[in-house]
Length: 237
Ligand SMILES: C[S@@+](CC[C@H](N)C(=O)[O-])C[C@H]1O[C@@H](n2cnc3c(N)ncnc32)[C@H](O)[C@@H]1O
Image (tube, rainbow, N blue to C red; front, top):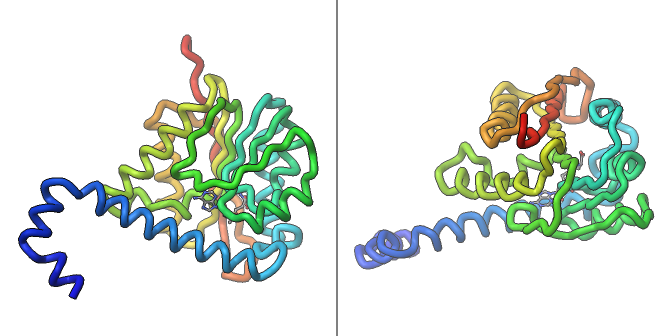
């Protein structure tokens, strides 16, 4: 029935004239709903669903992520997709202020209990549509970008991803750093993780470091991680 309605000439004419935007919004809303629902189920399973406290892969990943940030103290950090705060705890040690953001209320609740420190602020929001109201000299996005509409999936998703990443990186201060870390198990997933880095470079950031870790036994088979560190140029560079 929906198919017939969608194909009706008057509906097509309406869509062509006005409402490609509405259709795009509906597709993105559907994506957000599915992601939110999946995460709700993950965090309902109980504490530490990703085994951050015990998995050798995750422990190595966090260690390398901190390794890439050593040697500098940050004034204000944004962690996107902080989950239960395992890496937020590290950021709280090396940053004067931390904003830790996540979609999941259950995850944030556990994160607050783990990192109960006054210089850490918690925000429950969908980062895709969230409007930052201040700037940061460090942004960390680890194992989170692939929850967003994949930019390679089609023009609407590409547009949504570009809007999101441009909005976010406009609040990274000159000289500020961006750390990306994303696990992958296949060549296709690696290409997708590399693509995030290329998009960031196209927005003017330059790459300071890139490394791969992994080959750690994991419950889903062998898992690797691509870690990339970028810096936003200062105006006179
Ligand atoms: C796999 S966990 C990663 C946690 C941590 N960053 C790490 O390095 O392991 C992904 C987290 O991102 C959050 N997330 C996914 N999509 C999000 C979105 N659109 N906005 C904010 N948080 C999101 C999830 O709720 C989840 O806590």
